[in-house]
Image 1 (cartoon, one colour):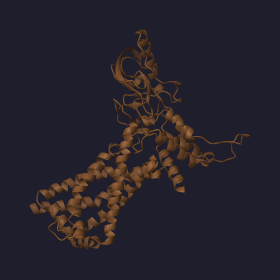
Image 2 (tube, chains in turn red, cyan):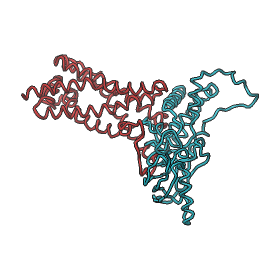
Image 3 (cartoon, chains in turn blue, brown):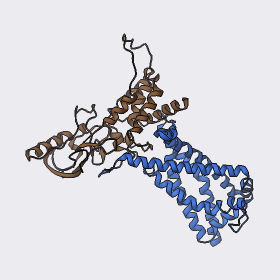
Image 4 (cartoon, helix red, strand yellow):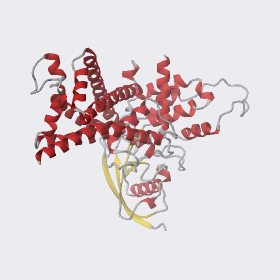
Length: 230
Length: 251
């Protein structure tokens, strides 16, 4: 199977799964933005998705994509390290135009994954999981998503720590996307001499757009938390 | 103005493919900055021969930047700390007095060291043999203008064809990937009408050979193009991906 056995095929899978996850991220960000305007609107979205069959299928699809993206990432890294050979260079100079994030995608990815586990525990486990199984995992109704968000981000001190942690997580994610989007386009063959610079710009812009809604929501609750402290 | 400098050269010495290599430091006095890097190595070797020591083995041929033989990793850069040149075009004026210069061979699983700084780059030849050509039935020479080719296309094909197959791309790549080389070789033909006919088969065969020979997977960091002595563009990699994916989807 060429998607597994050829280097270009493997990169194509990486690019495709990454792009799909980016689309999910955009979708996720737009839904979160509702929180800033109206908690009821956000809870309506929570109810609409919740444990309905389409939301469950969607979640499974996303989980599958995450697994594919991680497995391929690890597989590619193992192969790449082997291809480098046993002897490493003694002196390694900075190569012009090579960004730090492009050389550390695995590290960035692992940080994202680690924090994702915490994120899933804080929200998915208490919302969709609780609704699916009927087990009480949090202090609120599983469909009252806004209450969970508020609890996590505004509880004095810990809420603010969480806000900062999330913002750091967004920086890591932004770096990952900043290289990932452009790299995915090239891996899918969507680049040429004329578009090279543009693809770089598109990559940065898309990464930024994807993270703006999330950042707004966290900053909003950070402000609210500080307001409650004063 | 070029003057004379005293330098220390730290060279990778390895007796054979299986031998354990190590660095050896040599002092060179009064080296003219107008000398090329390879001339400096020649001076070093003369000194070593005079001392009845084994001279440093290294690849070189044309000494004018077109053959792609000289393959040294100088101070962390393939072909040294200057851009768009080969090692033979690197001059000692790029180095300072009393500087220590570290010289290493290409390090990549697909380029095993033969001796000292000389590596076996046969892998690139094997990739070329897998499909880097146009099958032509000989006959009368066709008129040069029989097939019109737009100038920008001809230019891009020519730029891709400037690849000298030196191996700096795979040497510079953190993944040991040969994508820029394969991309240049696929592009120079895929862009032209004569090469388009076999484009799909070529892309598949050359990528398959590249993978088989143990080169890594491209992660689009761009180190290859930054270090390429011929400034072959990363855009070629996108074209290779496109040609390969097109060929596979057609299957």
